[in-house]
Length: 123
Image 1 (cartoon, rainbow, N blue to C red):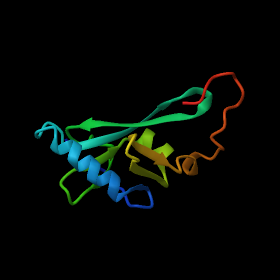
Image 2 (cartoon, rainbow, N blue to C red):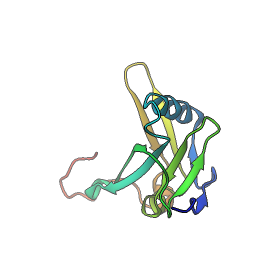
Image 3 (tube, helix red, strand yellow):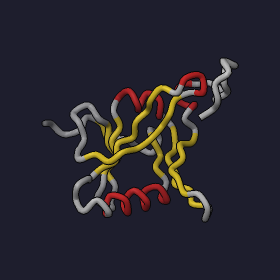
Image 4 (cartoon, rainbow, N blue to C red):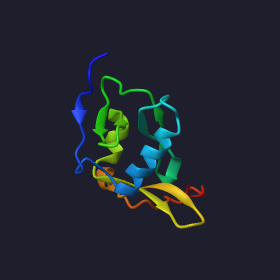
């Protein structure tokens, strides 16, 4: 398998320091089973797309990659990247809830993020 095609810059996808620290800790907890996290996008109906992350062993040939100095990579396939251009991945821990948050995701594809009125709930 060849090396990744594209190195992502902060203009492509910004991963905040809080998110990087949490990703590094989570990957450290895998005892070497994962060296990367994959950001994915899936259809969410009228409420927009759903954004998430999962562990990955390595980047695929067509993935774009962010390499972190903490020893891990963030990999994104071309489909997900088309919905993430200019977005920010952050980690927020308010003492009650702790989660990764995807900000500015509509910058890449336009739209308001509002439901079109089909009766379905927001995600």
